[in-house]
Image: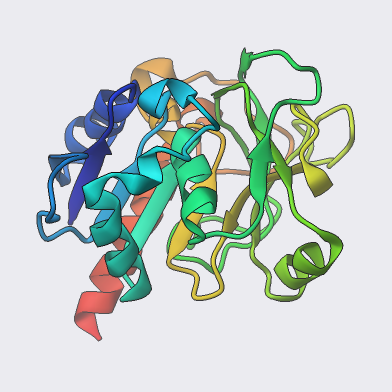
Length: 247
């Protein structure tokens, strides 16, 4: 299992992602600089969180012009796994690999806190070890996480089961009070139609280290330890790749 983690000027979660997959999940991982023109034979590409190019113009909009992004796009269109986290999610919408856009939070404030998310679709390479309805506690930290798409696009997401995560309370209730940024339908993460590209605002790499684990599980059963719930996303990716190699 091998990850490529793309680094842009302003990335600040690149090492967090590296630490999670290399040190915690014991996978191979390589950094790839934004000016590089080739990937390093990954099974999965991570577009990490941060403030690429200082979020000038609009979050993720300059990063899409980096030379390496053309290779990421080719990799994704060939069926390769890509996960964009926070700023990475913004890049995926800017490149058109995912539909919709991420706007400024409804509160107009930067939000940084622990956040519950509910699993809506567990039939993806990124959630296959979870059950539909499971709840994870995954930190968020963003200023532009307010997901928006037009009515036709939203219906398409629903019809194609492309909504993977929704913001919820600890009991899995998807409510306005549980929505930290005003996202349409409490959307916290989506996939493309093929199912190989995931964008999510919460940070699973920040919820992977057992040193962060608490023993206060939510009422909906999940894998033991709600604050290491990010591990199951990376474990699901590994499980998908292993299964794919066996076919």
